[in-house]
Length: 373
Image (cartoon, rainbow, N blue to C red):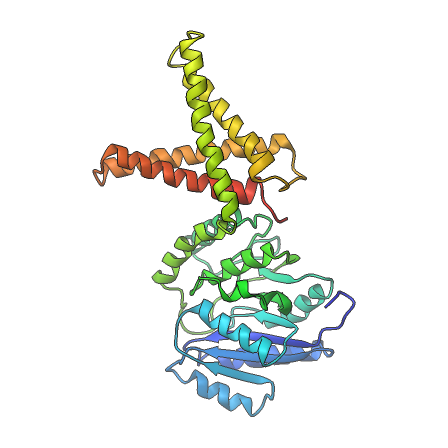
């Protein structure tokens, strides 16, 4: 669908679990916006995880009123699994051109739907209702939740290579359906809420043209949040996966890292043995030479062709900053393991080195030499 083409079928995929108090008003508010988008056909697909509170019966009652209201049910396996089932049905059974992701609890303002679609018609493939761009807000968030949300988004943005997107975990989105037909979407491993961040990274890596529009994320109409501790743990565990979409780059990066060890040791040996420079000063010089060597090799070999619009100096500054961060991570993990867990110092140092190296690669790969802008 090109910008000049008209919108045909729009499907709103709403995962539900125990939303009996909210689902009726959410469905009615979405269909109410149809009058502002006359050229499109609206479908709402409820993906219910066998709610025991009567959600399904309410939806079935409303089906008599709304011909384009559909529902599929299944075992509760997490938000991500529900969305994948919903996407598959919307594409195969409803032949949707556009798919909306929305919460079913009333926290997403349905009145913004026409605005989403008008932005879509400008040629964008992914429109995100963002809480963190200018004009967006989270007035009901506690300080703790605001901090968690900001930190979570920061990790996704720079590890996942989507630093240009401010809100990677928003659940209010409009997506060009053709991007969801690809096998890479079905194979996303995230089962819970981390699916949202994984999906943004995958769509962006496919080249989806993205736009964020401000939203106010309000309090739920009724009920409690479904975000569990398991979801939060999965989110954290999923962060490294976001950066490992290209194993060839990681292998090259590791080879460069090993070469840096030899550069470090070689320069140190030459400075101390041939030039008589002290053992206090020589490591500083040799480490800097290794950092510069690693940067040059990564820039012209590992990530050749990436982020060409940014200056050499700017990338070098980023690389240095991340090297300091990974070094601090290495040291912090080492101290924690030997002081708290009384692990052997050599083992502790090895663990610290590995974690620091992984962090170094993830951020450099997806920020310093980001592939998609």
